[in-house]
Length: 311
Picture 1 (cartoon, helix red, strand yellow):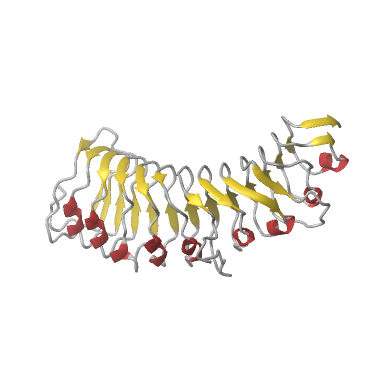
Picture 2 (cartoon, one colour):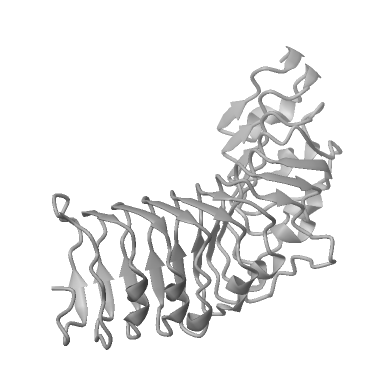
């Protein structure tokens, strides 16, 4: 079936009882789309998949594949979308160098990939989604990834990434005015240093999750002024916010999570947030009396496990 010379599209999606393994792929091949998601295909991906020079889309999520991605993946010049989430792949991430002019969607989440994120991913200028959640990735986050002009989603949570987001070589996160970046999730890594104020300045950013890292410092509330709707900075135990009564409004801010951090006072800027619904400040070092304005600001308020003494 896979070796039919004129076959261009093979879609086996959601055949949950279909088992088997991938064969050797001959050259030449007309195959452009191969969709195996939610089947029971298993084993490794053969090196001969590099013979599929016309392949544009490979979806094989939620299967039983394992082993490393063969180096021949770097020889697929027309590849546009690669979705291999929820398998047991190991080894380094594929380089995707030969498809840099066409590639736009990468989802390798929930595998066992190791090593660092290739800096060459920043050469995939059409990339819209970078989803590498829940692997065993190490190294730093290449700041050049934030400059991809069409990137909408960056999910790197649940890895072992380290270092600061502005690296020692002076490379900084510099949002471009037309960036469509909507979601950044770096939750549950080992990142540290101060949080770069520029991280909040992507014009279309809605969701920012930096939870469970080792960021530190005192954030100036002015950095939050943007179109963002949800910020999660919880479980950064050395991170705080200037408590001053700073009259700024983050126009779309709906959810703010800052539990298990280093707050000793509820920051005054929260009183000016007109759309704030959820405010979580549990497991901090809050003391004394709660400000009266807090009752007029939020719908859901979590101040548990602090040292407050009076309403």
